Length: 232
Image (cartoon, rainbow, N blue to C red):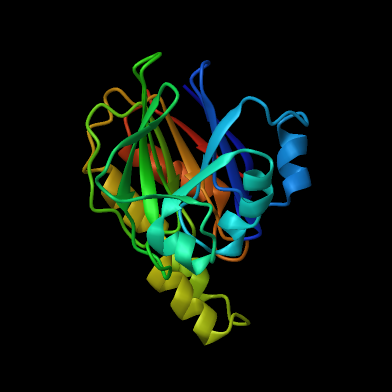
């Protein structure tokens, strides 16, 4: 299974997952033109798009995708927040499939109506991918996971030094996004013996440090895990 980032920041998020037989998008929070450019101006291979929640940097191009024939899956709460009856609703704990991909949505914690993460299993190569972004923490473990794509949004010490950041924004960040220390503590609870790559998503422009984040994560994961930061 492959995981490719087209965009990963507070300005927009979009990723491509493929097992060679089925390709899907995770998020569509960038312009439709940028999505098409990232796909070589060929949407024909994309079977669906999974959207974690309704915020614009994750759901901007929902209607453009639907109009182009790409089925969009999201929670009922997300569909209602987007006022879009054309979204196919899914719910945490209820598995569904798109082509050769089996998808299990799970609950995440964010300031949105019904945010979800996704565990994706390929019947082609037997690999498992966990995708979770825009969540203050995670309450699930995933045995046998091969790929992790998880939010590493900010560092609390760097955030505390962002003097020009409005207090309202600072409060929202700390109560709706994953802090690097929280992520590292979570990673220590997982069996990563089968994990080959960890993608760090959605780093804050103001309150993150790419090199430091990679170093901290490498301390808590096995040496077989390749750590990659997904940038803009």
